[in-house]
Amino acid sequence: MTDLGRSKAMHSMVRRLNALENFSTPREFIDTANAIGQSEDRRFANIVERSHSLQALRDAPSLSALRLQSEVRHARLYSTPGTSRQRLLIAFAGAAQRLMMPLPIFMQALPANTDLLILYDPLNNHYRRGIWDGDHTLRDLASIMAPIIGGYDDTIALGTSSGGLPALRFSKLFGLRRGLSFGGRLIDDTLRILRREILPPAYDPLCACDDLQNTEVILIHAADNAQDALAARCAAVAANSRRISLAGRSNHSVLWDVQCMERLPDLLEMAFSASASTLNDSLCKWSASDLAATRT
Image: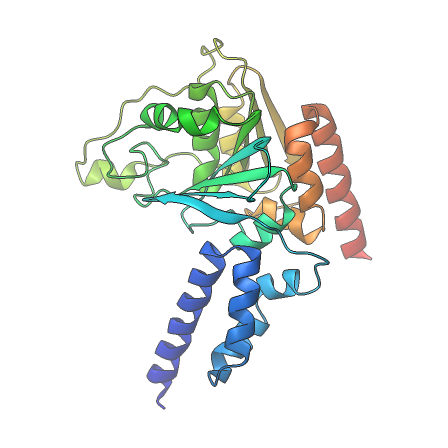
């Protein structure tokens, strides 16, 4: 096989792994990984064997029971059969179609009584055109989601990267009690302006004047990442906002950093149950301890 042929083959296997890691539940991933391991496709089996998902899930004492309950274009609702609907986490994925990590790892860290509604933005336009056909807005999305959200005792939103600030905007538009952004990025319309595309309205519910909602806005970012720090400072003008800056860190994928600290289950539970001050103190403490351990 030529170098070009090997490169194409490797690229194809990486795409296959990404598809598996972006859309599988923990049980689906393990079942598929076992089947691949017993197949004759040894090269792909070796790639799956070294994947982050398999490393994180293979030693878990039990796997998350979340299953795909319903699906529409660019939105998936996962729940555990036979359980009461106590809590719902609405997650806004970034441009990489994930929450800074493979979906099975994120699901495995969710509290047992929490369902997951994950949204994707195929237009990579900060969800300003909705998620289906590009003709809806975040405000439309909030109205469409009302019947689903109304079935839960408690609902919060979380977003990463280009999905970070949309999660906060959606939280305020719907009147959720809390929205969290991890490494949220500002909208850059430079290319859209050069292409003379029609831009969505400029109204932003994260403006300083919008104090009608009691939604708590929490922005979490690496202190040494200039883009993320700027975005957090700009969005923190919103009413009832709190910025959590992790000193000594520069990685954009700050939620993945928390996973590497082995604290993601704690964080996702605290996202629902802890005060913003407690969340701030805990994250900063975990991060400082992890950095100190890394240096030594």
